Length: 97
Image (cartoon, rainbow, N blue to C red; front, side, top):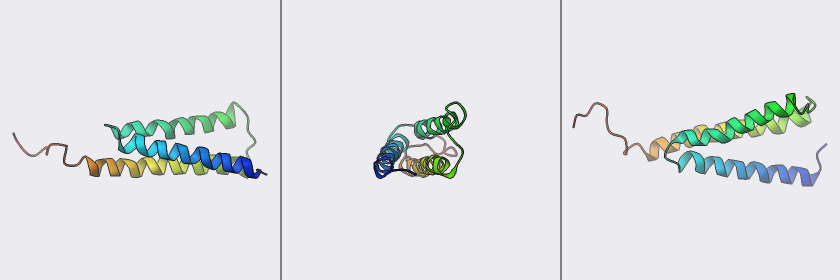
């Protein structure tokens, strides 16, 4: 079972990652920059369960699963927000100069 300081630290780390994910996705020139954090966390999750041999039980799987779902969901919504922000910046492909 997790202790309260461990849970608080986990929430703070997750919050920092989600905020960084938002700014990487929406504020950068390309929304693909925001995909770096979700892919890195997914890679670390796979390494945690294969290389570092964390036990495969609900107490260890759930935090990693929730964090991965949140980051990929934030990346998806950030890409949509980026497209809405930059919709007027892109030239119309059917329009000739």
